[in-house]
Amino acid sequence: MDQALDSAYVVGAIALMGAVTWVLRALPFFAARWLQDHPVVARVRAFLPTAIMALLLAHAMMGAHGQHPQWPWAELVCVCVVMALQWWLRHALLSIFVGTGLYVVWINPGWWF
Image (cartoon, rainbow, N blue to C red):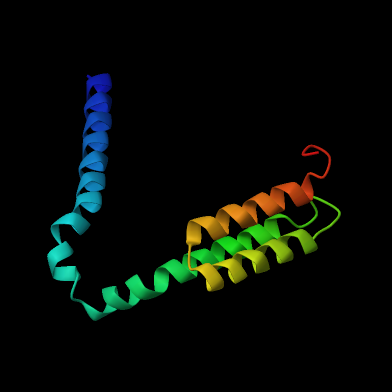
């Protein structure tokens, strides 16, 4: 009987966790029409992409520290190239591909020629 109680508890806990997870993930879709016009959501929508890119950039720059002897010049130059291309062409995918390609070629000097 003790084992049955433990099994029921585990199944109930898993079901409750699944229900809470489903509700939390579905809530934005159900509440989207009310949230779209809210001023806080509008501000976050305008601010969040830039903040995410800044955090990714900071993480990449700090994460590369000490992995290769040229640090930080390869990262700094490639970031500047991406920023200049984005400012000039306004094509994010092209800017990212060129910057990433330049970075890969820069830190792996022996494999591409």
